[in-house]
Length: 316
Image (cartoon, rainbow, N blue to C red; front, top):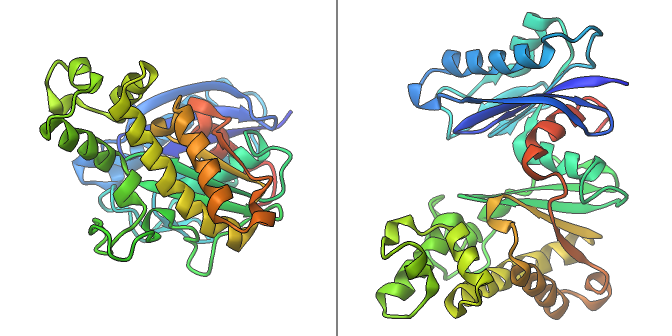
């Protein structure tokens, strides 16, 4: 069975592993990205550590090395820019590592990579057209349309976090107004809880952090929701309505069969998924919305590694 090295580059950690063509992770490791050092050479060395770990003890030649990275990536494996990694611009990761290891190297934007992995092995397996988004500090997205990854003329289709849902809405970090990220990004979910507490609303969230508002996270809000807390429930319902409004437009545009939501924020929040589906059915064209499913990621914590390896196993 063919094997591949999968490298998932994040702003904080680089995750690396050896995968097979069935989407199994055979071994894995994690190293600090060290982006704070401000040197691309330091980060490249960390990636090398991950590759060396994956290749160690491997007797047969692998299919190659798959790399998922933040930023805009072209068809030649060059990263044009990645704001969270200093010096990560006009960098041909494909050239660097194909020359060093004499192996095929495929480089893709991290969320595009995860979308492809979900399509092949995860929640999207067996479907033809899916939308995949990740919820975290920001909001990323990817599309597989009719079995092909949609990349766009500038290799960055579905910058979903910066699609406006309210043209009079609050200003986003990107400079635009009313972007979906401004409503459902990590910092803004936390901001909503802090504001409500400061306005005197009673909530388990306050008790869970023992009054230390700076320790509120989406995970804490989820814990409160699981205990039946009204404020936490209202927050997740509002997030669901905002995402549902966004997806209604995408459903009308792309007619997907499935929407996959990944990222730490999305885990174990049933009310959010229920509200998204309900809002889509209320807002999108009936014939397009009636069979739509909204589900959590199927690949879990190894999504980045599996998906990077998947870039080697089927043409996307």
